[in-house]
Length: 90
Image 1 (cartoon, rainbow, N blue to C red):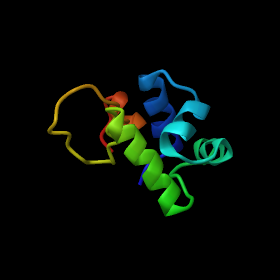
Image 2: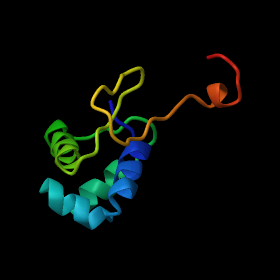
Image 3: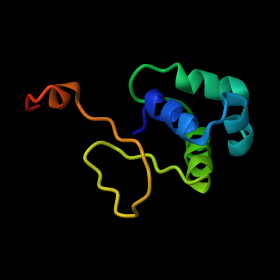
Image 4: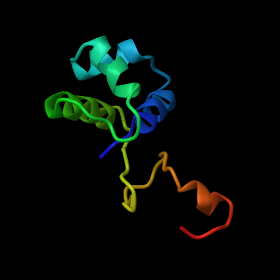
């Protein structure tokens, strides 16, 4: 599962706008807009989501799910639970 926040962070890493991501993925701008305005995990047509994920992967961005390691190195974005940022266990 991916979140709207992850998609926005991925675009920020690439320094692209929603229109550019839509073009890269071969889907419509309104689809990207709806996806990024979701709360929590992104919901939508699986084919469209896969196109977005594949476009981001081709551009060098790896979307990491919770509790997944990244063995390829390089830069990335990972969200931690807010409690761990404050030094409290989950």
